[in-house]
Image 1 (tube, rainbow, N blue to C red):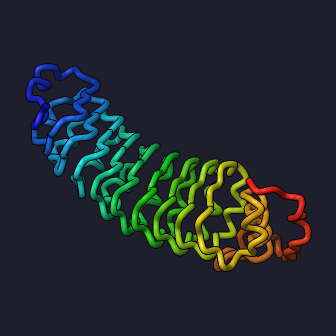
Image 2: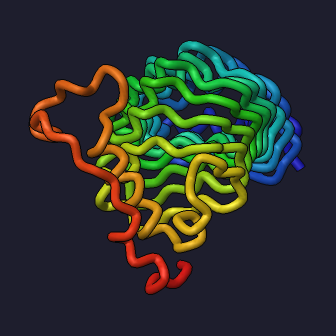
Image 3: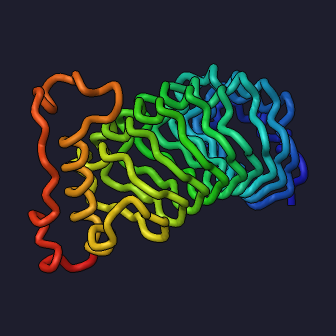
Length: 267
């Protein structure tokens, strides 16, 4: 098994993919920058603890696949990679999402599940092109309001954290099709979720929803989203009362009887 990044790879500067998964590599030294044509760097299941700042020389890098390592930080120079679209840091030791990651505005897919994340920087709202975000199985308690600025998100997994509240700005995530917030400590949901009309896979079980009627919770995802939408339209979140084209000065009364709960099966 390899214990160091293979020096022989430098003999092939035209390489576009390097895969050294399932080895015992502990660090990426300065030589990592000697692969200017590299597009895919795959180092899963190693013992990585550090990455040299010279990684910024990989100007064509698209995919950075580093799951199942021992990383707790990445160099700030990573944000200089303007073609990077995919980062996988699953099963490492991160306690926060690095600000340098939040500056990679070309990102489409970010996976940092099964780490030790305790907070998410407000700067994550800069990732306007991000489509998939997996933060499952961490120690997150809250999310920043600017979370709702990731307008392109279609897949979001926040399951198995310690979340007590979600930001009301979720109503901006109109492209969301898959959302998992199961196994958290949520008492209520942002009513704006009801405006995510493309959301067709919604997991919310194992939360202590004390502020949501039990009959709504047990009736399934479809009824839950309709309920949240009515709440949203009936009472806009603070600071959004004057948003044009949504309320138009009207207040809609929430009528639970309209849900026909007895006719709806769980889903």
